[in-house]
Amino acid sequence: MPEIKFYKHEPIPMEMHKVKVVQQLHLLPARERLAKMRAAGFNTFQLHNADIFMDMLTDSGVNAMSDMQVAATMHADDAYAGSETFFVMRDKLEEIFGTPYCLPAHQGRACENILATRFVKPGNCVIMNYHFTTAKAHITRVGGHVEELVKDEGLVSKSDLPFKGNIDLQKLEACIQKETPENVAFLRLESGTNLIGGQPISYENMKAATELAKKYGILTVLDASLLQDNLYFIKIREPGMADKSVREITRMIADLFDLVYFSARKFGFARGGAIVMRDEALFHSMEDLIPMFEGFLTYGGMSVREMEAMTVGFDESMDMDVISQGPQFIQYAVNQLDAYGIPVITPGGGLGAHLDCLDFIPHVPQQQYAACALSCALYICGGIRGMERGTLSEERNADGSERLASMELLRLAFPRRVFTLSQTEYVIDRVKWLYDHRDLVGGLRFVHEPATLRFFTGILEPIGDWPEKLTEAYVAEFGEDQ
Image 1: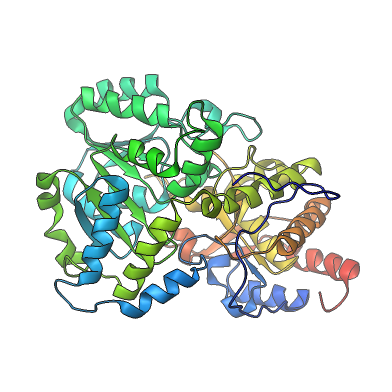
Image 2 (image 1 turned 90 degrees about the horizontal axis):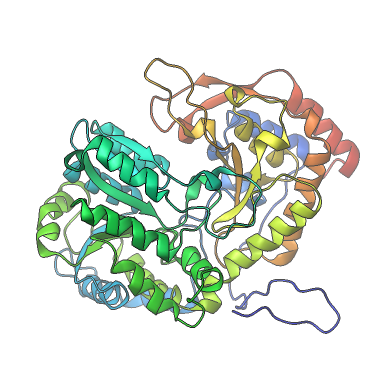
């Protein structure tokens, strides 16, 4: 949407909806938050939602559904096989993507499991602009390996480059030739690079990369989970795209790829997922895996109520007024934090605002999980739950040493249509306070470390008594009940 102009107020992002249903929030006192953090093993994933004031962990499955989505859930067809709800969803996806074939799955990582199981053999390579944790885990689980070839500029925290998620085309061709085309299972492009700040990829870069892959006969796959944010950025940032509709841009992108998959927990504002394609042979090559891992071919492990809501959500994701709010709120937060001198990824991307922990708390080494430590500190200092996107999210090397992440980020996600501007201002204020007291934040170490996806269920402990010192400094500033 265009920026709303004000008569006597600085420009601010506007919610293009009104609130009809609310959920009450509670702010625990700081000392209670410290106790909850300790009980959660200094892992924000292990916190109880009832103990959180502002949940900015993720935008996955926590977006607010519209009134039309809720209404759609009431006429779902719950047949095990041949559900009419599935055909309505499939037809809507064909309308948007031009893909007549659809394999439903319960969420995005289920789609990744199907793709890895069917296409990746031991020793195979999958090339990406950048990896996502579950996508990489599924590939390595079956013996493959990942090459991530985002352009060097994508790993620079502060810049004004509009498409920091672009893949390096020269590195792409060199990698194909080194690996040999026969050993590359597929090229996966993520439309919105989750782990490096939600930074978008341009249409022209996607076009050039897929043309290069097809030159070598390599399957092309789009992860469209964060597509709605990427569509917004293409329309407002990419030359020649301003006059095209969101639907036109979406179809242009989809036409580049052999397979498109997504998590509807992000794209579609509901809870589900799917893999869509134009080629019947590709469809048949995977269809047996849906009943094996997910459910029958016309529900794929999803609730049909969610499928009805998703179908409406796909239409809403084609509306610029709908998809603009998230990026605009994120950019507002990024601007305010950056103006204060706080190290934050610029320009603002999709999904959330991302704090650069290497600069925020440079005294905490990556081996002590700086991003996770900062996420714990922010919960103590405001009841705000963010997500570590750094070394803790990596898996160890084969020799047991740490694989240090390219970027050490604390992600503050903005679930769609959930938070108000005053809540956003509260988050900005507490991050400012924490930045001014950043020397109080220390590191963490593992007590229990799972072998895979350790950031989900790992248990950590602080190195030293820094959480107590931070809590007391916060109480001295804001009082006993804040």
